[in-house]
Length: 134
Image (cartoon, rainbow, N blue to C red; front, side, top):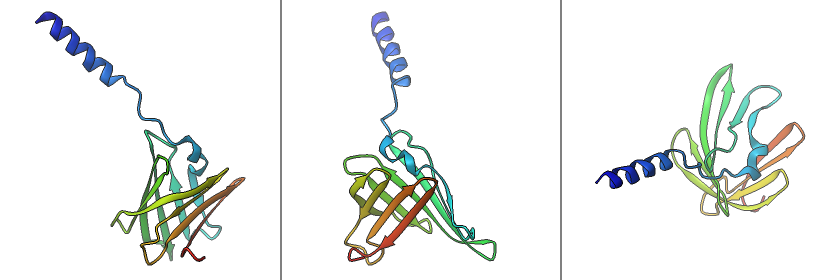
C-alpha cells in the first residue's frame, strides 16, 4: 500500500510539472497590438501559448466601442482560426496556405467573409477579408 501511494504521488507530481503543449511558434509574428492610423480599429494577438493564439478586435465610432470580436487560432497542421463576432460563434476558418509572415484561412461555406489573410511587413500588419474569388 505504501508503494502504491508513493507511485501515485510521484505520478501526480509529474503530471503537474509536465510541459504544456507546444505553441504554434510559426505564427508568433502575429503577436502584438495592431491599430489603424485613425485609431478606429484595433486588433490584439497574444504570443503563442499552449497551442493557441488568442485575439480580439475592437471597432470604434465617436470614441466608443461599436463592435467587438474575439478570436482564437488553434495550432495544428493545418491551423484553425475561430472567430466569435460579437461574442457568438465560432466561425471556423482552416489554414489554406502559409509563408514567411503571411497566413491564409478559408471557409467556403460562409456567406462572408470566406477568406482571411494576415500579412506582416516590418512593423505593419495587414488583415484582408474577402470572398474566395477576391
